[in-house]
Length: 425
Image 1 (spheres, one colour):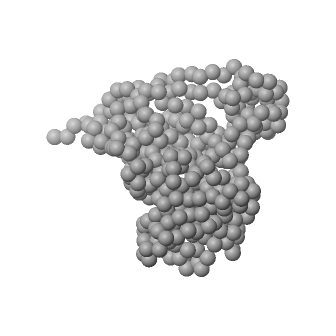
Image 2: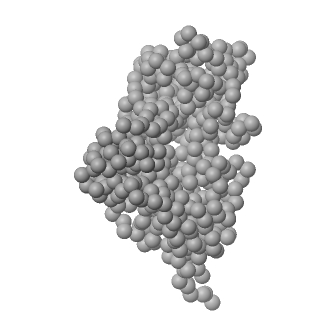
Image 3: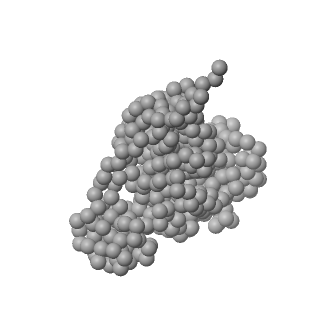
């Protein structure tokens, strides 16, 4: 005898995180008929993908995938998006959760037309977090050209200053609302998918690699922003110390990954990211010499392996199997010397380059920010899914290190798991 399906306590799904995994989860659930609340802490959707110049497997720019998803969200009334929002608490049981959401003020309402007059009126500048602090922006700003929602933001740093009033006075559409304040919203949902994503491991903690002390040592995500057309240098790859076009670049693999003092696991994406970024340099500077220092090159799948073989065939790209022990800076030229031992020949190598790029590892956001719910984590901060219990699930890089394609596949599966929670038997 079979039992009839009973109505779920709530037919809604909460998706926490508006990166590629969160977008995929929300769309997959909404397009088969479920109400979805999508909560994102930033003032825009898109997550890490929005910060890339290109992403695998097709080396698409972010616009390639995100614009389509943004259009699907805009056209789907079942998805309700909350940006500048944080989940403060989730309580309850599978099928019947209450989520408390803090909505932080944007100080710009829906009248905004993105005319930019508020930014022009501002005099104060703040660090641009989207570009990892490599440049500065006005206190009234559009996070980036592809921002969704397409609406400016006022930095909290200018609230209460003359700049805030200048921004309000400059707006012809009454879009600047300086009286906005934080609000708390309660949502009843049947399932929660945590797509809280990842953050680059803090390179300042890797003492021997010189980041933070030497300006011509940057991270792989900083390289992505530098190479991106909407980045701090409008796509020009150049040395931070003097804006010089680099004649040589070193990529240091496993910067903090596979290291018991930092991240003990392989971050999955770093090898392919550095191989990809080598092509960025080669496109701009055909004669530049590129040195990639690695423990192992990991290129999962036939397509990635072919990409690796193509890189190996480039006569100006040198792959050196050896973990970098330290880096040094010439105080006069600001050149960087990378010191490593060649694991094949046993030779000690000292390679001097114009700049170095650290392939910093992928750390789950939950490793440094506690998620306010009854979740299980492994020792590294990744969510361990309990499919028997159901109700709440980690998706994408909140669950394990993954590239964009793998994150999408995982997120589709977690949308299905969330739906299964809603339909009780």
